[in-house]
Amino acid sequence: MIFLILLLTLGFDTTQHKEVEVFKREINGVIEIWAMNPNIYPVTVELSATLTNLNSDKPLPHIEVLTYDREEKLFTLVPVDPAKAWNFETNYITYTGDVYARHDDSFQYRFPFRNGSTFGVSQGFGGEFSHQGNIQYSIDFMMPEGTPIYAARDGMVIEVKEDSQSGGDDKKYVDEANTITILHGDGTMADYSHLQFNGAHVRVGQSIKLGQFIGYSGSTGFVTGPHLHFGVKKTLQGGKYETIPIKFATPNGPVVPQEGKRYRAY
Image (cartoon, rainbow, N blue to C red):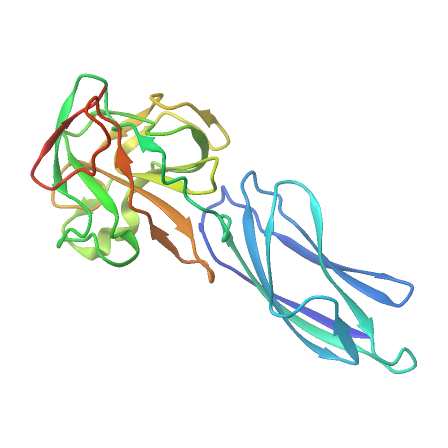
């Protein structure tokens, strides 16, 4: 019997994230394909296979969301003719997040700065400078470097980057933005980006409450000046993501921040 498993991992490329293990179990001539996600957040696996003298009990390619720290059976392969040899080749990709997540559109986010403070929006949804494509529904709040940042929603920290000291208005700095990523209860994730060097005051795996202090704003990454970039995103099939249109709570009802206007946190 011959089998081959090939791995390609997509998603966050840091040591904070661990590889998903995909493995087989053979019991009484039946081959089971299993997976284990060692991370503290959901991971989506997309798996395709080339089969010889085998049938799968599920359609292939197969997509499944793996929860934390639990072995999960993906599908079962059964020989068509048990008297003959079988083999299979399996290719899979894994990426951070739940591809089936659905944003709670009724939720009203908190402005991510100190209560009572007011900041302007330099770039809103669809901003011409950089808010296009997968980050279309993002907001840039103008603020001096070192401004305290607060969580806009409850969640769990799944990514922290704070080692960058580089930034500028050249796209070569895109990957230099210091960022905190927080996973929400509905499976979406919020990015708080362009933080200052060593500006994160949370750790991966930490539970966060709405309004909790999480770090300091900065000017790292692809920027024209100090500001906080905020966006809520969901994972897409294939490992990419897209931002989601959101609204913020105010005493006068929910608002979508507009470029050129100023907003007060409550």
